[in-house]
Length: 68
Image (cartoon, rainbow, N blue to C red; front, side):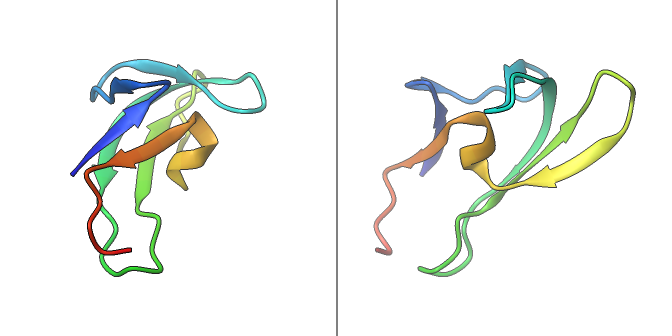
C-alpha cells in the first residue's frame, strides 16, 4: 500500500498544498492500522510548527488498500 497525492506517489521531504492553500513539507506517513482508519501524515509548516493530519488534507489517497 502506498499514499498517492494528486495521483503521484507521496515523497517524504516534498512540499504539498493543503485544501486551505497552505504549503506544508511532508515529514512522515503512517499507514492505516485497521479498516476504519485513514492513516496519518505528519507535516511541517513554513513557520516551523509541526502537525498531524488525515491524508485527505493534502489530497492523499491510499493505493492498494485491501482491508476495506
